[in-house]
Image (cartoon, rainbow over all chains, first blue to last red):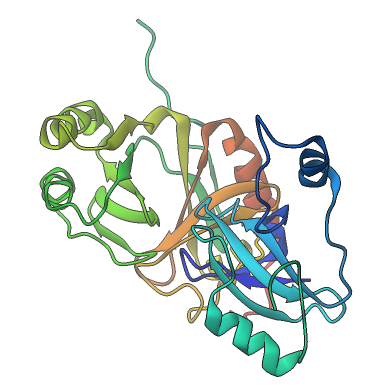
Length: 109
Length: 187
């Protein structure tokens, strides 16, 4: 069972109060994109063993979307952060680096 | 014109913990910039209470203000004052980006009162309902079994639950069932 802290209402929300929204920080490809880029956007997802970034929605609570960083192997939650960003915040990335040295995820490390 | 009725017509199951349908209550959903001075002023004028902090709920009699999310408030007013309250908000916030809707008859209010109320709720809810997890004057939006609800307490013993009117029967039966046997008295 995951417990994530919603960054909007600061509640420790149980997984069953949340709705999983898939991988975080996807860049939307749209009109004018190359077919390959569009295919990547639609279908190609990370499937890491370790550090992972996801979108979640506090669906039974404040209703806001947010981001979460967690480990897919141990279910350790590294932190949650606002949805209004294109990359994980620096302090969170540094925190993950101390726990999982040398981690990479897409363009982030 | 047909008479207005509340969701469950004041249904009640009495016991150690009493579950009661709370009857009529005016409820207004207000979305907008909660730091806006005009918004704060009109909320105070309509409900008579100050703006709550994060997750807070300030009540005075039937009226009150509840923090629902960083851009949403729930205004509680007497049922027959809901429409005029919306009109006041519309007049005060004209020109700003906001949304105010009278949702009174889309919602139901259920009260859980008496000894063991916390335990009755905790049996059907994933949230931390200990006094430390849900103190007085704080509203917890969560789910009761299958449906989203908002729960709060003013005095620490008696709880109020707001849910959608369409699931009022479900929530009432759920709580009535949970209240059938007394809890071990842990909460």
